[in-house]
Amino acid sequence: MINNIQKYRFVCTLTFGDVYGQIIVWLITITVSLAAALALMGARRPVYALVTVGLVILLSLPFLLFAFVTTLLNHIELMPLEPGAKMEPIPGNVSQQKPVEATS
Image (spheres, helix red, strand yellow):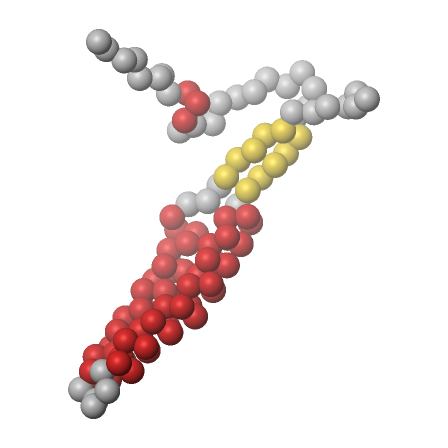
């Protein structure tokens, strides 16, 4: 059997600032596609406007999700703890909060 079992410290260091640029770029992309759609609405076939918006969103969403997931994975830390080391709580950790008691 396994005799060398270690405890690990799992921490996600992702902050809003890490994904802020990605959100801004995607919002700009959506704004440009909506501007193109409004420009095409004046054409004789407004269906092209709806197709343009749908196509831009459909093609940009996978890139946005890939960027978010890779950014998240780059901010996950998994470090082995030394045997006998005391676990210190991380500030703002959810496990340090008291559970809500039900009243009846």
